Every structure is written in C-alpha cells, then in structure tokens.
Length: 459
Image 1 (cartoon, helix red, strand yellow):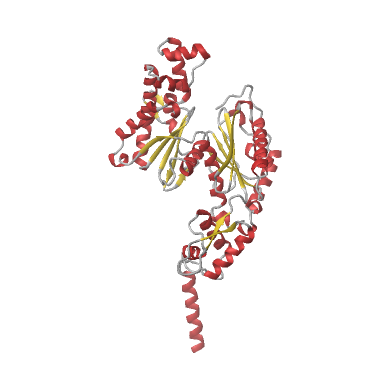
Image 2 (image 1 turned 45 degrees about the vertical axis):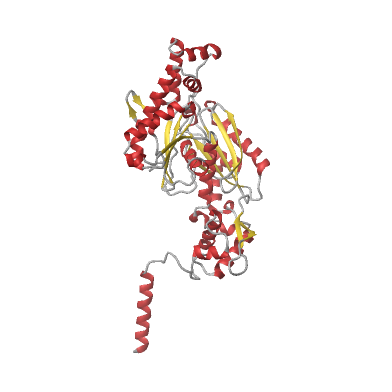
C-alpha cells in the first residue's frame, strides 16, 4: 500500500510540474536548449549590456559553469573575442569579452526614382563605406540589378570579411508587402510599373549569394535616424520623408511600426484643403507651381533661374525663400502648414518625443520647418508638445543605408532566428538561408518577367 501511495504522490507531483508555467528566469536545467543560452549570451555581449563573466551570470541568471562553457563555445565559433582587463574589485581583475563585428558584413542598397545608393556595414550596422549615383529606373529592372551586383562586388573586394556576406538590406519606394509568418521572404516590387513581375529580389540574392530583407525607403530612413541620427536614445519618434511622395515612419517604444500589410505611414494620401497632401506639398507639385511662377514673372528670382538654366527645381525654391523672394516664401510656408496639419493628429495619437523631417522638400530651409512647427504646436495638445522637438534630418542620403543595414542586423540576431545558426558560426549555414537562396535561384528561371510596356513610366 505504501508503495502505491508513493507512486500516486509521484504521479501527482509530475502532473503538477507539467502544468506549472515555464519559469522566465533562473539557472537553466540540463534539459534546456544550449542554443537558447548561447543566443542570450551573444546578444548580451553584442549589445554591451554585459561584457564580463560576472555581469553575464547576473544578467542571464545562469550559473558560472554554464556561462564559462557557453563563452568557450562562442570563442571557438569566432563570434566573440577576449578584450582588455577591467577594474579589479576585491579580487582578480575581470576579463572583458566583446562581439566581433567584422566576422561578417552586411550590404545595403537604397533605390529611389532617380538614384541609387549602396553601402557596406559591419554586423552592428555601422556603415564602413557608401556610394551614391544617378540611375534611370524607368529603363527597367535588369540593368539596375546588374549594376547593384557590380557595386556590391566592388564593396566586397574593398571591405570583405572572413565570414563573407551575411545579408542584404534593400530599401525601395512605396509600401513593401509584409510576409505572414516568414522570416525570409522575397516581396514583389510594385513601385515601378515596368518592373511588374520581374523577380528583382530573387535575382539580386542569386547574383550576390545572400538573402535580401526589403523595406520601404521611409522605414529604413526612420531606422537610420533612430540608430545614428537625431533619434539616438529615443523610444518614440516619427520620421517624415518629404519628396516626390510623402510618407512617415513610426517608432513606438523602440520598435518600428509596419502595420498589418507593411504599409503604415502613407500620410501623403491624407486629404487637406485643395487635395491630398502629396498634390499640395510633394516635390512635383512644388516644382510645377515654381515653374508657373517663373513663366508668369510672379517670382523674379525663379524667372532668373529659368532664364539661366532652363529649369526650376525645389532646391531653387528654397534658395529663393532664403533670399527673400515673396513667392518662394509663401509657397514653402503653405507647404509646411499643410504638412503640419497632417502631422498634428499623429502627434496627438502617438505622443512622440521627436519628429524628423527628411527628403528634398525638407532640405529647402527654415521657412518650411517653421511652418510645420507652427501648425503642429497650434493643433496638438499642450502635453504632447511640451517636450516635442521637430527638426530637419542631418543624415541626408546615409539615413536609408544605415537603416537598411540595421534591419538586417536585427533580423540576423533576433533570438528565434539566432538559435537556428549560432552553433554553426554563421547564418549562411542556417537551413532557412539555404532554402531562400535555392528558391530564389529557381524563381529567376521559372518566373520570367512580364514584357515591359513601351516607354514604361514610373508609378
């Protein structure tokens, strides 16, 4: 009877244990995954949260023996290295460990309607080099993807690493489809009509030999400002791109908000007096009004520019405003107020600590910036605007490249994805990596591009 009772008690204890919630912290049991503990320690070192064995034991809540074993594995894999000695506190000086950011490299590219930019970064997302050039995207996708592959090969030759390319970040105009549950996904690029059906992402991945993460241009610029621009150290901000199109990127509690389909931030389609925001404040609309003013003589400054150069640009409008041309001042003031009226409800909704304006229109000068500030401060709640800063981006074309590299770095070291490759030493060995490249190679053969319409125009 006693033996049966003991068996019953053991059975009940086992049932209760299986029903109990998995603990969130504590020394890992032997049954817990080594991959998980390796990933946790690597990210603690990579982020700088903990760089000594004692700090790692405290932050991870793992035992000394486990931490020592996992660090030995990470050292053997080449993902970390031993650094300098720290300050001794009541005993032997601790030895710091640090992440090896040049173990691999990340390539980044930004496509815009009339230009492309490429860059190379280390595994922290820090740019090592960048290159910008004009390109005519209306000519079709084939020459663009070949040019990108050539530029990437040049950058790899100049800034290669022992671990090769770990990923490519690509920024494109317009919304980018958000995959449903897939980490590696090749979305169709729909911003250009004559690119419809062309397997651009797949061809780029096949030519370079690395998976591609794609985001909209405004989302990568937002990430760039957060990590290396005016948003450093902030958790809530809005980035607004004012160019041919107008869109916004939102950082909420430190995370980029993409929306259900990846199309969050399309504020250019918001209606304001006279039409939607893009038709009022987009660069094409401003250029059109400026040309009309030059032709009619309403703007003496722009009329002079037109006579000298044969064209008028948004930049010319900014110069005119700085020199006191009444038409240019009025045009940029109206543009800024329209943008501010659209941003004010967003400020009330999201309560950001910072709004950053970027793009060609934002670079026209302080008159537009002052008009945006006036409209936002006037139409937003006092609590929202009490500490709100509205500034112009100082990163220029680098913001998108930095953000594209950051997108890849975050994806590579996401704990769930990291656990799939960490014991292999490189994400190039991850089964999902290899599967993505295999699918990309197949798609470039089995999914030919649709014929390009004559004189295909940009969307």
